Amino acid sequence: MRIIALSTLKQFWESDSKYAESREPILAWYRHTLKADWAEPADVKADFGNASILRDGRVVFNIAGNKYRLIVWINYPYRIAYIRFVGTHAEYDRVDAHTI
Image (cartoon, rainbow, N blue to C red; front, top):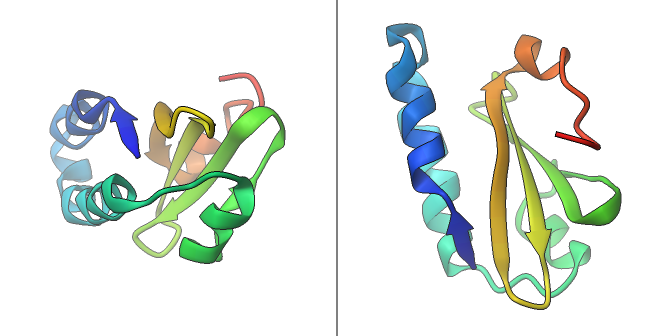
């Protein structure tokens, strides 16, 4: 998979020292996803059983034991994952995962 963009993830963990601990779990997700070849939502679920598949190609990943949430829009035919949101679980509760 191609991931757009690592800079969005990096900006998150560098934005505040309280998010610094998210760096390694996010990078673990990133490294795993780079090697993935997801052709459909079922492929995502096979790799990340706790991922929530939403409509229109959106997927919510639980990071660091559900302390952080990552919303990704996946273009399956082109194997591209677009980072739409990264934040704490509480911040996630304040966004609409279907439209962000």
